[in-house]
Length: 207
Image (cartoon, rainbow, N blue to C red; front, side, top):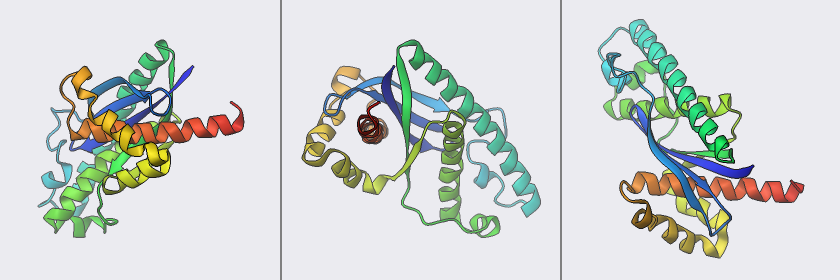
């Protein structure tokens, strides 16, 4: 099967997902979609930390655990379905990339709920964890790439070709059509980076 990689730019309750395949410098987008990993009927699912901000700590933990279980389930279902569709087309996901915020490690829940900026940070990590768990379930290696360092990662992966590859990815919207926002562009570049790394390992091993 041909190798492919997936990049995800995460938001509250969903992720912008882009699948990349092809050799270095000749990457193509196989798929792109918005993957929703919340039950919209579940109260507080999209912003779980905001929802429990004023609750007693044990009630907050219980709600967060329920939401986390549901988001993990939905992420696994969605990514399993996507991997199956790609397999039917002759492609196998060999790597994934999750874009991270530049935030520092989070403190305990009580301190998070006392700080509005930390609540936003925690929710981002909450949904990234759901995607990460799904990739682990599918046994797809996952790289966590800070969004602010994406250009540096591209330079390490592609060397002098990095600016041209980035320009190519940025311009893919002309042929793909909308949406091709910053979310899709950064997810695509992250996927291209981890795909290049996976391909290098395969070539080195003679696979």
